[in-house]
Image (cartoon, rainbow, N blue to C red; front, side):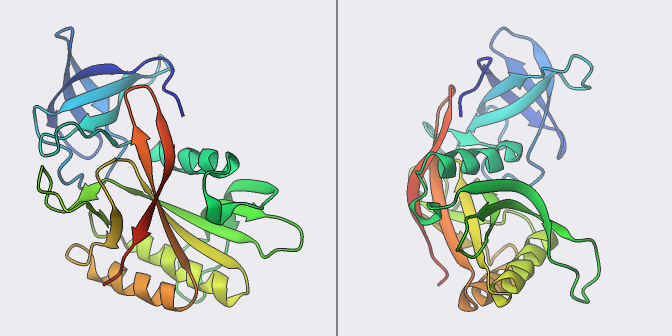
Length: 249
């Protein structure tokens, strides 16, 4: 996935709230940028961090810039992709290119397909991020999660990526729905898309959301598969290509 037009560099002044950041561009201009990641962004929002923005293509959009990448102060030399809206497309691109060995052999991919039901839990039906299909095989339901949080940021990082970085009732609901998919005789995959290069394995963030961690372990025990792949992140492109372990100690 290439960035076109080219990203514009600057430095983070402050992440004002979940949706807006102030950035000083290299040309000296102070701008407001949309923050396309509503999570806690642990280790990725320190003022003074090097950042890259994309220009909005819609001239009527409220904010003319979108925050795409950050080089955290705690992890110099590491670029992190923050735009969760790109995650599904990044995973789909890798599947279609045959770079995800576990998800080859499907002839069709559909996105945002409604599935499941409330099963007495209440609420609306969900949409699966990616649905893989091929005649003669069970459908494969792929739920994609973006990973940016690590343990011990900085030069002494142990390379552990964590999900989630904030309590996620929605994420737990998705796990329950994947369990239902397996019970119905289909294939269910939880896919962790790690948009940073200093991670060697992904773990549930029990210290942040213990319910999610317990539900993930339950899902794995019932046949839900967990995959993790890391992206090579540069100011010009994102490429998902490196398989990581998913560890639930």
